[in-house]
Amino acid sequence: MKRAVGRVIAFYVEGFREMTLGRTLWLIILVKLFVIFCVLRLFFFPDLLAGKSDEERGRCVLWELTLPPEQLPVR
Image (tube, rainbow, N blue to C red; front, side, top):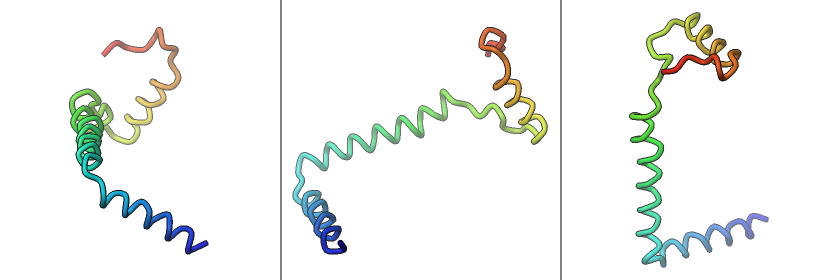
């Protein structure tokens, strides 16, 4: 079993070493993921619970979970 896992790992390591175009494509993928998860989160998903006490956070979460969608406050 260990030998099979080692061969699979060696296969992928060797494949990544031999890449030329693939490295550029992986770099593009990683940059896009960084933009999606880090940069966009800062601008479009603010922390609405920041600066609130535990009791206020609990009330806010309960409010959001229990109200029907038509009664939710517009932000």
